[in-house]
Amino acid sequence: MLYGEEHVRRYRETDGAEGHDWNDTTVLLLTTKGRKSGRPFTTPLIYQRFGDDYLVVASKGGDPDHPGWFKNLQASPEVEVQVKGDRFKARARTATPEEKPEMWRVMARTWPDYDEYQKKTDREIPVVVLERAT
Image 1 (cartoon, rainbow, N blue to C red):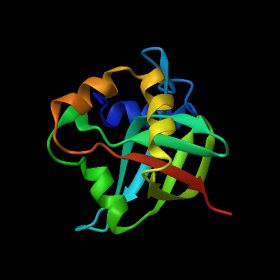
Image 2 (image 1 turned 180 degrees about the vertical axis):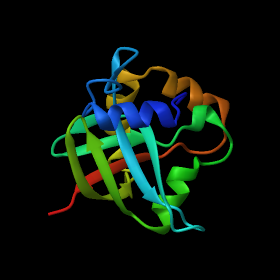
Image 3 (image 1 turned 45 degrees about the vertical axis):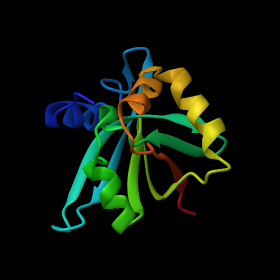
Image 4 (image 1 turned 135 degrees about the horizontal axis):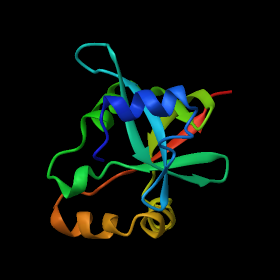
């Protein structure tokens, strides 16, 4: 997504009043721990609810390599999520092959470009499930 630090700051300051609604879809903030640095990194991502969970897509616009945030959560799946004013800890996992088709349809309905991104790359683009920590 074309979102900079200023957008992340405004989303946080306004509890998502600025930044949650974007281009006819919805955006959350995902904070991962850097796999090399150990520092927190926050990335705005398009999301959809799926039952009690949240879905995001590691598309990187169809790039042949996974996005950095996805590599970070593979190394450390404990993440922080902000949806509007709701901030919570979550565990991230990649959708299973059985789950993915339905979850992909949900995400492609909200952002149809995901289908185009998948056609651009040989990499299988993961759907990530964010499960709120209890």
